[in-house]
Length: 38
Image (cartoon, rainbow, N blue to C red):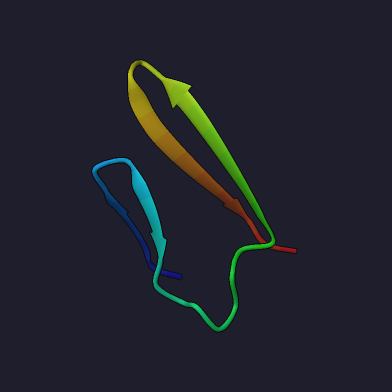
């Protein structure tokens, strides 16, 4: 799974199987993306 973050924009490279759940956490002014696949 390839994840590209550009200017705080979430881009999922694998469009055939989108992530089931996307959790966005903002910590220390950093945008962290956690992908949970079921």
